Amino acid sequence: MTDLHDPPGARRRRLLIQQWGAILWPSFVAAGLASMVFFAVVDPLRLRDISFPHHALSRELGYTLGFFMFWAVTAAASGVTWYLSRPPRRDDDDEQLG
Amino acid sequence: MTMPDRLHLHLVDPAPPSPPPRRRRLPRWRTWLSASLLAAFYALPWLRWNGRQALLFDLPGRRFDLLGLTLWPQDLGVLLGLLAVMATSLVLLTTLGGRIWCGHGCPQTLWSRLFRWIEQATARHLHHPALARAAKHLLWAVVALWTGVTFVGLFSPIQALVNSLWPPAWSGWETFWVAFYALATWGNAGFLRQQVCIDLCPFARICPSLCDEDTPQVQYDARRGEPRGPRAPGLGAVMQRGRGLLDAVSASDYVFRAAHPALAGPMPRFPADRLGDCVDCRACVDVCPMGLDVRSGPHVDCIACGDCVDACNAQMRQWQFPTGLLRRASETRMHQRRVRWLRTRTLTALITLLVLLGVGVHRL
Image (tube, rainbow over all chains, first blue to last red; front, side, top):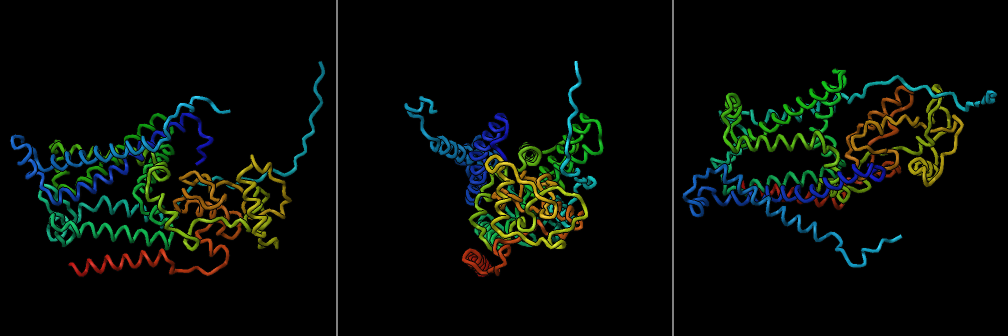
């Protein structure tokens, strides 16, 4: 890919997809694995009985909610990692070089 | 007012005849392989085994049916073991054969190829651009939705799912996951395509550390092909007309000059009898799904699909040159050394695989 010669708009779009992809995609895989292991041990219906006994939540809804909860948590961790791994902004960064 | 003096143009070379334009065709075995892998995915939930769906991850019932095998939640280890066996096999395959998985088996490659084929077919058959675009998006949506239905059919009995398609009677979570998976297919195969491999795929990042100089990859035979350039037909290939192969240093020098004209300056002109076998038709660049020029040397983004090899071979046949100017070969083979089959990486992967299989057989 000759990304250096792409127009700036395309380069920015590519960078944006790369950043969001790097946060959302690994957290998606991690959440999938975590859901698999978690729900192999825990039955969503038993979990409902001890947490929200007055709500009619089906197993499917339990799996879906559980997966997205895992994904939200893993994506949040990925997002903070991305944020912290950017070079911090220092005072002397304001002066333009060159 | 006087007429300007007439310019005298000296044409150095006759314009090279361009071979007749040919539609890009994949060789039959690759079309068949892609088609059968896609068909296998779409057929997977329809397979029956002893009157039950052969592959069903029945989440509400908390049981997984895998052909004759039924796994319950406490058998999670078997499922994780199967995943580990598949991952290790992939490592072994990649070390021995290069990125075969990426080029031929990966869903991202297969669905991107299908979506690109739809794009090209609609553009070819419908001459009105707006109509072609509408047809393309309609077909993309149908394929994406059916992919979503097939995927959810692995988790919810597909016969019931399809029967309740019209009038629509899907449960909320079925509708949601069909839409989610259809949207992912549509975005990944229709729009992101190779960017997924370049920027988002962790396996693509690991590949360079799984491969070594004995691993086959797509290579350009620069000693035979350089210096590249258009020429009049009838000259013959380098081996036929006695020019022979270049020495490795000159060949890589020409490759560098062609790849970096801004650094190296313009390419010197060569008399036709000194030219190599690369006619610089750029067929390899035009077909590359990753937008690479494989002649500049092996690239980490190359998914080894072999499109460039086929395009080049087709050109070579038209010029009546021997094929194989681009070919799948390891570094060792390019340097005429013996390929070692047993290396540290292969042995590690092989032993891990055998241990995993051994544990599996022992447990079952």
